[in-house]
Figure 1 (spheres, rainbow, N blue to C red):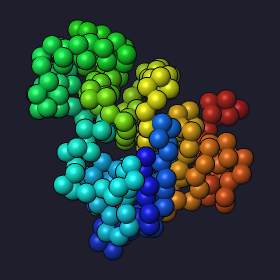
Figure 2 (figure 1 turned 45 degrees about the vertical axis):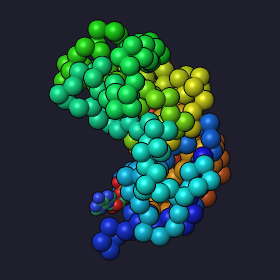
Figure 3 (figure 1 turned 180 degrees about the horizontal axis):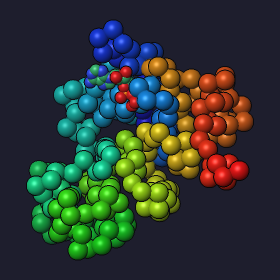
Figure 4 (figure 1 turned 120 degrees about the horizontal axis):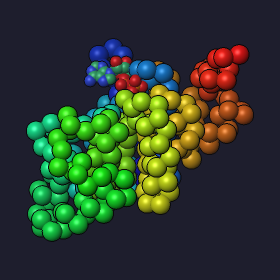
Length: 246
Ligand code: ADP
């Protein structure tokens, strides 16, 4: 789906991405992990044309990303950020409908698609009439996901989508989203701080450090055959409750 070749991006003297080569397979889920400041969000933003490389190339479906082709590209990509990134002055239905309206969809078509996705994402119908401030964190996240899925994109990009949720809501949404991804068969790229979450969702985990990919592969490979001490420490950095009470 995506091919990145020697992608570099600097902010002042600091390199956010420092020679990234990455292939993102279609129909699979890829998790970008790594410490804060490793370049995960910058990489994700590049996939949707919100950032551009200083050097190197990002290819989508075999062709380099071009600024003049962005509107067409964005219709093929759903992008979800923490808390859903909803517009506060629009109710949930208004947020979800925004893109479809600009494309001239009829009211009936928008309503039908919204109802279909609300059922799929388990959002109660009455929540669609509420404003973001009147929704729970989990509901805002579901609305963000529905908005991203509205145009039936090929790709879903998720930046810390569950980061702000309490543990039980997060646990439930993780289960529902994984089932949803399996069912929809879309290409999913997600950024997370949470290693267990990355392992839960991903076919491929990409571990970044200081703008470089340290190791990528199936979660099991990073756990069983870490490329170096950093990978070993990073993959084992989370304490389980069992371990904590011991
Ligand atoms: P991560 O998502 O892994 O936490 P980011 O991609 O957000 O990392 O950031 C990578 C590096 O680039 C960090 O050092 C960050 O401070 C820097 N950076 C990211 N965006 C900007 C920006 N718009 N302006 C200046 N520096 C930035």
